[in-house]
Image 1 (cartoon, rainbow, N blue to C red):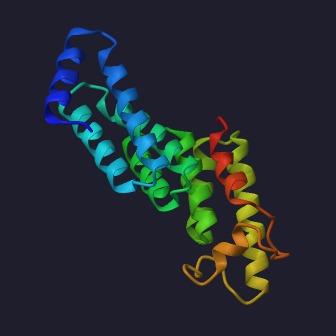
Image 2 (image 1 turned 180 degrees about the vertical axis):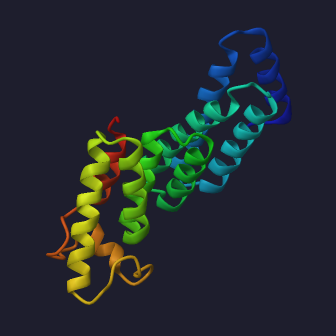
Amino acid sequence: MVTGASRRAEATHTARCPYGALEAIHRSLDTVAQYLKRGDEARARKRLDDLVANQTTQGLPDTPIRLAKTLSKAAELARDADRLEWLEELYRETYRYNRQDPIAACGLADILKARGDLDEAERQYRDNIQRWPSNEITACGLAESAACGDGLRGSGRGAGTAKGSGHQEHIFGYGHTGCPQFDRQGLLSQGRGGA
């Protein structure tokens, strides 16, 4: 259990040690990962919120970039724990702090596609292609999103309209012939690639 006293001790150590800040971030993210492994998303979110608040109050000139890196790492943890809603929130927040991060931008597009928001995913992929024209993940994601949309339009389902209507099952590969087959981990692991 993390107490106020242990946080103060961590802050004191951070101030004395040049690598203390990085160590504290890694320890906090390890704690987030442990909470997620135990299925305690509420505590994981609280620990990450505390970490972000701590980084924000440091007032360093590159705080937005530092926050984006922390949130991007937390997004990996959420992805690995199959916390898709939180994953989307983290990608959005990462992208808000650093719009030059292709991993967050591509990850956001991938998660939108996985959720069935094909129109929004396509807009995100197109924006990503304008920013990073040689990014293979974005180009493949756009092609897959378009294939899914065309297949669903032909089936009478309509793209981007199926939140909560079973469309996600088709994106995750439960047999719709108009859409490339994906499994949850396969789709989300695409976001691990580089730009």
